[in-house]
Image (tube, rainbow, N blue to C red; front, top):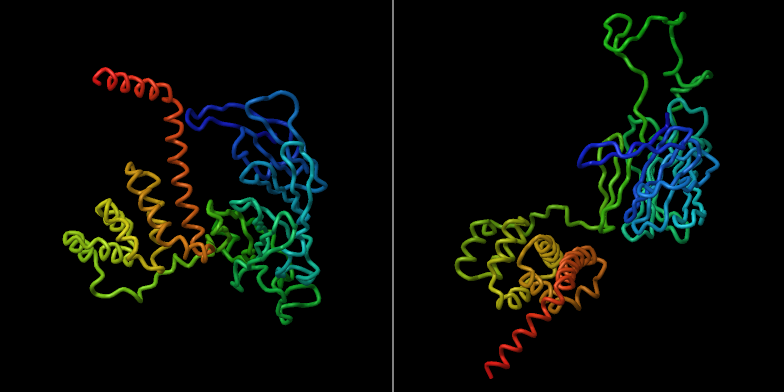
Length: 404
């Protein structure tokens, strides 16, 4: 009964059924570049399935305990797996060998549940990672599970970089490290002791009005169900019982209205564009931080005026302008126009950005990614039409020779 079903998303047809696990399947992960599927199961095995070549048995990675999560590195060279023992294992995908292991049992331990008979320092057996993912460059691993902590590990050195507490809500079970002694009795927590002399054998059927007064004594346990890194490596997100948590190294998501005045309005942007004051219009649009206004100002700026407009951009707006240019250029047909914007920004402010590279690295990567995508597309078109271009060049040269 423990099968993996593969479906065609476009047609909705069942393609294949993968069998081989003898326990419940806990996690699946696709290879980023190849048609390989990684499956983790409670039977202690991680299997590598080739979805296009179903010849022979899949590659099997044996673990000593139940496996609950798995994730590929962005380049697909490694895969990380997590077991119920709090152990993270790093495997080589090509030869299926174990490279090293990271013991995170003590790192994720913390928080005492209301029915725990041991303190949080000694009760690390039930804490393990249920979700893992690699950073954008593959140097770090983000891991979270049934604990109040999320850990970030450096892969090459196998060390804990930092751990975050996702919730301080005292109403959740597992947040406090020490319980209140007045709630403890000889038989355990007072809330777990049934005060009635006789047991209640009435059937508590969901939706029934008799025998169920709707009261519940159980508390929601703090845990993390999913973690993920952004493509830039500057942010990561986690899903817990309290919702979605987003952590960022940048503070550009914080709204700062200090520099806003009564003169900074969308109408002021339009009036300065009509008057030909493109530098002032660009600064006002960056203050307002509205995508449509910034795009309008950039595209209405004359090509020959780009160097002069770039020189008026201050350091406080440089990062935001780089991100806007990268975002617009990704799907704009005006490739040469926005390439000129990028060139002028780097020539004018490149020295300052080099000295403060950590601040502008996110925007620079986004801009580089947009240029790289367009470069690859143009290179493909030119390579496919190389001989046609040679023919056109030779024909034009023959026409010139005949006319001479």
